[in-house]
Image (cartoon, rainbow over all chains, first blue to last red; front, side, top):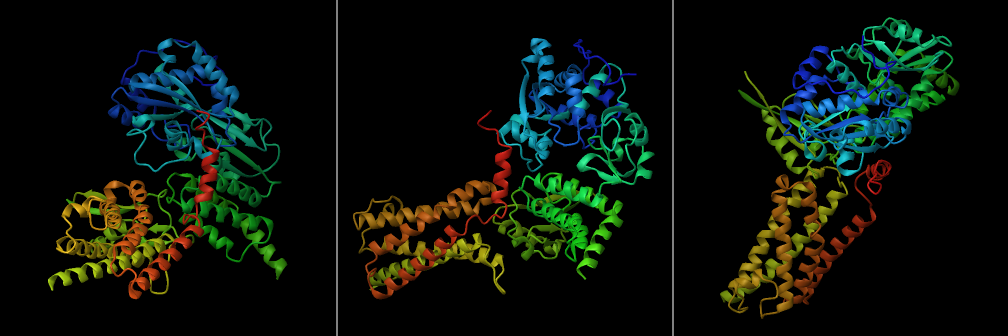
Length: 370
Length: 72
Length: 195
C-alpha cells in the first residue's frame, strides 16, 4: 500500500501517462486536500478542455491555516513526490508554466522543494518559478494566489472568471494543494488515494502530523497520537474553517473529505479551557484576517468577534446572543470569497455545541449586574 | 424555454450605497451596515424594470442581472 | 427683431445652462456623500443628477445654435467645435468650446458606462471639476450682461453652491467605509517591490 509519509523520497522517472490519468484520478475519487474538497478529476477536465498549451500549474504550499502543519511536513519530506504530481499535471494539461507558491515563513519546506527541484531534468526545471505566499489566512485561497501571481497582491478576487477559464497570465490555471499533487503522483503509479494527512493539535500526548486511512475514525487518530492528556470538552474538525463536535460524536466519526474534514486539522479542546473564550479568540483572529474588501465580511465578522468577546469577558449586551445567531446566518454567501462562510459556520457550530456555556456566561453576567 | 433573471452582486465593488434596496425593497434589504441582502430565486417579471433601473443606478456598477434559462 | 430674439435666447439659455450645470455638480457631490433625507431617497439624487444633466445639454445646444446662427456674431459652426478659432471674443468663446467638449465626453461616457466599466467612466467624470469652472469663466468673459446685477447674482449663487459642496467633498474623506482597512490589509499582502 502506497503511503505519503514514511517512504523515502526519491527522484524517479515519471510514469508515461496521458489524458488517461484523469480517468484514473476519477476512479480513485481523489478530492482536493487544501480544504475545499473539490473533485480533482473535475478540476483537471475543466483545465484540459480550455488549455491551448498555455495552462499554468500552481503548486499551493501556502498553508495559511495556523494549526495545520501537514503541507510543510510533506514538502520537507516528500518534495519529489509533490513535484512528480506537478509535472504530471503539466504534461496532461499541456501547461507551460509551474509556480511553487510556498508560504513565506515555511523556510525549511521551501528549501527542501528547491533542493529537489535542482535535481530534476532541465526540461522540468525551466518551467518553474517560485513565489513566497504572504502569511495571511486568505493568501492561500485560489483566487488570492492567482491575484498574487498576476499583480503581486494576495487578496481574493471576484469569481467568475474561474481559474480554469482565466487565471495566471490570463491562461487556464490549476491551483492544487501539495498533498493532492502527491496523491496524484501515487495514483499515476498505480496506487490508490486511500490515505490523508491530518494535523493533530491540542490536549494530546503526541500532537503532530499523521497519515490516516480514509474512513478511519478520529478516535483512532487520537490513539495514534498517544491519546489525550486530559479530558476533552470538544473536538474542532477542519481547523478554523471547520466545526466543533461533541467528543462522543467525534471519537467514532470516520475521517472523510465528504464530512467536513477540510484541511485536516483535528483540534482537541481540553475540559480545563473555556470554550467560549476559545471561540472568541478564534473569531477575533478570523475577523482580523478579513481582507476588508467586502462590507458584510469585514463588519459582520468584527461584530461577531466583538459580541463573542463581550460574552466571554462577562459583560455582554442584552441582545448579543440573538445578534450572534442572526449575523452568523446573514453573513454567509455575501463575500467575494468563502472566508465569512467558514467563520460563520465555525461560530454556528460553537453556538450549538457550547450552547450551555454561552448561556451560562450571559446569565452569570446579567445576574451580577442585576 | 423561459428566460428568467436573477440578481448578482459583485461583493468587492459593492460599497453599501443602498440605492438598490431603495428601488427594489421586495427583493433587497440592507444589513446592519448598509450592505445588501438578496432574496433568492428568479426576479418576478413585474419587478424586472425596477431591477434594470437598480442595475443602471448603482453608482459603482456592482449589481447585475444574470440570465438563467430553464426548459419547461 | 429676430436678431435680438436670437441674442436674448443665447444669453438666456447660457444663464440657464450655468444654473443647471451647477445643480448637476452639486447633486453629483451629494451622491458621493450618500445624502438622503426624509422622503428624499438616494436614487432621487442620482435620478435628478442624470435628468438635469441631460436638460443641461438641451439648453447648452440651444445656447450654441442660437449663437452660431445669429448674424451679429458672425460665428461659423467651426467656432463652436474648434477652441479659439473665432475672431469674436476668441479666448472667452474658446473656453466655452472647451467646456462643451469636456461635458460631451462626460455625458457620452456616462451613457455607455455599462460597456466602459466603472473605473474609466469615473476617471473621465472627474473632468467635471474642470468643465464647470471653465464654463463659469466663459460666461463671465463672453456674456454681454455678465456684469449686470441679475447675472452676477446668479453666477455668485452658482459659485457659492458648487464651492460649498466642493469643500464638503474635500473635507469628508473617502465615502467608502472600508477604504482604510482595505488599504492596511493590502499593504500587508503586497509584495510588488520585492518581486
